[in-house]
Length: 260
Image (spheres, helix red, strand yellow):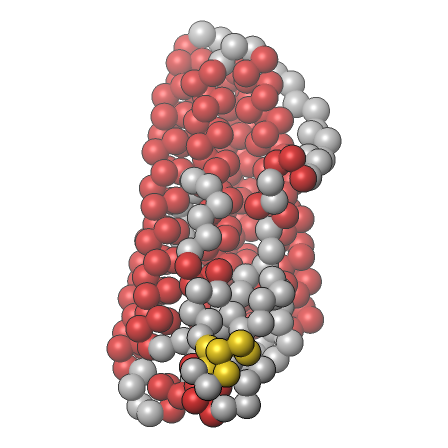
């Protein structure tokens, strides 16, 4: 495989078969300092409208991000350009998040707890959506590399079907305004598939010279397909949660408009 992209920065573990970019937002709150929030102002109606504008910006960013990844895997966009896109997307998404947090806090100052809570739910979902989007891109790229032993044995038809189904399901949330809940880190992204050689239990499979251990360091077909299902379901749940929060927020917007 080529050099790791911004989506695939290793977390330092020896032999994870899929890694995603470390998210600084996943650090414990006490260990990081939040950047200064941008200044926001306006009536509750205006603030909620501003949040929907942020969601529109996110939808554009996701569309551009997905298009760039498709070009990258097709060989149209080189690794350097794709890395630049990843960095630009990360920065832009962070700005969206800071603006959303600023709006949430301003609403709380004005005593508008319900719309502030809706924005909080959407923000939590956005974190999961971005993480799962990156995870699924890495899984797709690993699959396309066609380097695992079970792919060489002509047994990847089920995997191909799974990836085709993933494309169809992704199309279902492609137009979702943006999504929902916490820093879910599925097992496959945490390196839980690391295996050891029985002859050398104190060594990682990657370090051990045994061929059997080398084969053990890769995921099985069931591991891979399970990872795709898990990430897809987590993403789908996040999008549903976000859309529910946005629907409630639209009701709040109507109520505030009536009171303007």
